[in-house]
Amino acid sequence: MTNTIKKGLNNAPFDFSDMKDPDAFVNNGYQLQAMSTNGNNLISSYIAKYKGKRIYGYYDYQKGEYIEEIIC
Image 1 (cartoon, rainbow, N blue to C red):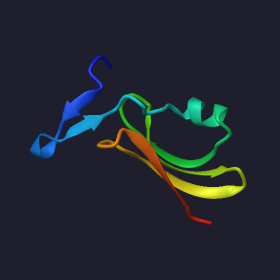
Image 2 (tube, rainbow, N blue to C red):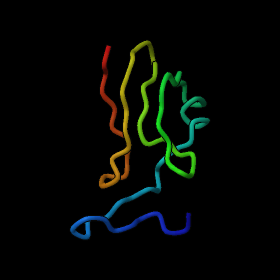
Image 3 (cartoon, rainbow, N blue to C red):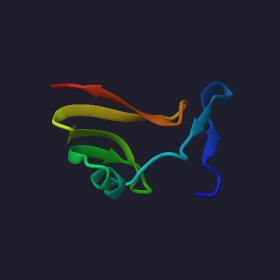
């Protein structure tokens, strides 16, 4: 994607530049259990085990980063 920042509702910017593909998560030690991806095979949300904890994560398009919450 050449333009990774797009405008959304109320002209709010959406930043796609730090989205990762499944291989990037696996290479960082995540054991993906479920995920949703966009048309470019980049993960938008996921459930995974990481460092012994089960987490839910999603990509915040306005902050341009993944947000994670421990769920178990």
